[in-house]
Image: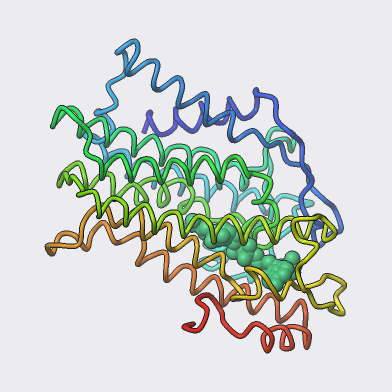
Length: 362
Ligand code: NDP
């Protein structure tokens, strides 16, 4: 419990003390726009640098302590996130709180799960608890857990297998990319629409770090060395996924920020009564959530290094099975939200771009 609380406190302290770019969130239902301090990448660099220095340099910290205490650490993260969820739920009853549209039903279990308050803040409103939990302790902690499993494998075998290197490299790339593009989270559903309750507190602080490291954990118990063709195949899946994921997300961000920008000025788009245009060519002309396909393909590339043989090998595929379900559900939620936002224009858009996630398949 001390380790989990200490990790949360350390990351929080760094977030509060380190300088960061200030960014404005989208307009809220009360017409206000919140300011966010963005320094996730600096916190990530400092915590990883410090962990490497004190464990591999000074030899003071033994990273293999983490895999050896995985179950107690997971339990502590679940307790910690539950306590946080209770605290934000209780605080949501204080005066002048902006409540989330979906977490304000009056049914305790539902509201506790969905999150009653939209943007709970602390420390004189300088800390946005939801944005912090989404990107800082859990995401950064996930990469550190992976590193600890790689170190554990090194201690057991005397080397790190190429499968473990791929899993660590891919996932670290994903984490660093997400943290570097921190501002992009301000327009996601989680920040703009969902309240902060048990679902996000548990998801961000316990589920993400302790289940997303399953591949690295599996490879510690069942080490694998990939042949060159297998390695190249996995790299190709990752590269394809990344091109789609980053290409689509950057295209939409650039278009929403400045549709006249040379990188997106050539795209075809349709006007809507709401005032915002919808892209109908390029990545967004291929499928309405082509970015989800890219994300899922990357997830597949994180699982493939664990191999395909044997019954036990279903376990590391947990991530891409779970993620497929999450993305299909998320696409349905966004679709419903867009239909409400755009009305009849959304129907016209769907006729022009008929595929949901996978062109010609789904
Ligand atoms: P999206 O980035 O897909 O954004 C959806 C919004 O984009 C819509 O509500 C709409 O908002 C706008 N939009 C939709 N179609 C168009 C179009 N044709 N032209 C212009 N704008 C359009 O949503 P998410 O927040 O779900 O996903 C962001 C990324 O995060 C994805 O890549 C996803 O894979 C990833 N993600 C990862 C998770 C993980 O656990 N690893 C979990 C969830 C997401 P408007 O028109 O109002 O601008």
